[in-house]
Length: 551
Image (cartoon, rainbow, N blue to C red):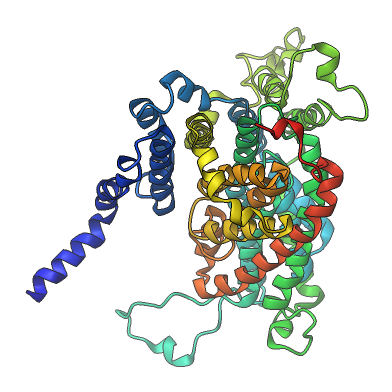
C-alpha cells in the first residue's frame, strides 16, 4: 500500500502540469454555468489564462493564444476582432525596437560601449561594480533585460578570474584542508561564492531589470502597459515615448544608485571599514592595474571602430531622435509637419528598421570604379542586420504574450466583465487614492517574484483600469506604478531570466538572493511611491479625472 502511494505521488510530481491543464478548467466551469452571461464567460477565460500563466503549465505564448479559440466559441468576441488584438501598434513598436537592439548586439557595439565606460569609471572593486551596473542599466534601456545580462556576465567572469590568477581577491570561499584530501571518487560540493563575487553578478541582473524602467521599449511590461492603456482608453492621448523617459529615467536612476549603496553595504562592507567584507576587497593599486589592463586588452581585441558599428550607432541615435521629436510638445513634431493622420512610435521604429536592411555593413561600393582591381567588390555587402539574424534572436513568443493580454482587455470591455468587476471593487476603491496605488503596486511586486512579469501585468492592469473608473482616479495614476512594479523581480532565480543567468555561474544560494532581493523591493517601491505621485502629476497631469475616461 505504501509503495502504491509512493508511486502515485511520484506520478503526480511528474505529470502535475498535464493534470492541472485538464482539471483546472473543470474546476472553473461553475463560474459561468451558474450565470451564463458574456461577462461570466469572459471571466472564465481570464481566470483560466491567469492560472496557466502563473503556474506555467503551458508555454506562456501558447496560453496567450487561448482567446483565439475560446472567445469566438463562447460567444464573447468575433475571431477577426480577436485577431486584430495580436498585432496592434504596440506589437509593431516592440518588433521595431527589438530589431534595432538586435542590430546593436550583432555588430558588438554594446560591448565596446560597456568596456569603455567601465575603464572610465575605474577598476577598484566598488568602482568596477558601479561601472558594471551603470553600463548594464543603460544598455537595458534599449535592449532586452536578458540580453543585457547575458552580455555583461562573461566580462565579469573574465575580470574576476584574471584578478584571482594574480592573487588579488577570490571568486569562491577557501575550502578547509580536510576537504582537499577527499577521495578521488567523492563528489565535489558546489563552490560557495564570496560576497564580492555575488555582488558583481547579482547587481548586474538587478541593473538590467531596473534599466528596463527608463525607456518604453526596455521591458515587455512597459509595452504591455502601453498596449492595454491605449486599448482600454482609445480616446486618451496615449503613452508617449518622450514623456515616459522624462518621468521614468529619474526614477530609474534613483532606484539604481540607492540600490548600489544597499548592495555594497550588504556584500562589500560599505560604511563598515573594519568588517571582514570590507577587508576582502582591499586590492590596492595592483589589483586596479590588473583589472584596467584586462579591460584595455579586451578593447584592443575589438579593434578600431568599424563602419558597421558607426552606421548602427547612427541608426540607433536616429531612432531615439525620431521617437523623442515625434511629438515633443514644446515644438511641432516631425510627424505633424508631414501629415494630419495619427503617427505613433511604431512608425518611427520601422523607419530605422528599413535603414538597417538597406545600408551595407561594409562600404565596398565606394571602390566600384577604383583603378586598383583588388579593391573592387566581388559581391554585394550584407546589410547592417540580416533577416537570418532576426529570425534567430527575435523572441516571437512575446508578441503573442502581448497580444493575448490585449485580447483579454478588449473582451473584458465588450462583454461587460469590466463593469461587473468595477461594481465589486467599490469598497477598495473608496480608500484614499495613494493607498490604492501603493497596495496595487505591492501586490504586483509580490506576484512578479513567482510568475512572468508580462503575465502578471496582463492580469493586474485591466483590473486597475476598471478600479480607476469606479474611484474616479486618472487611470495612469494606478496603472503605471503597477506596471513598473512588475519589473521589481529580485528575490528568486525564477523571478526573471536575468536573475537565473547571473546566479548560475557563481552558484549563488537562493537564500542570499531572497535577503538582498527583499531590500531591493523595499528600495524600488519606496522610491517609486515617493516620486511618482508628485513628479508624475507634472508630466501626465493626473490630478483630475479626464473626460476621455468617462464611459
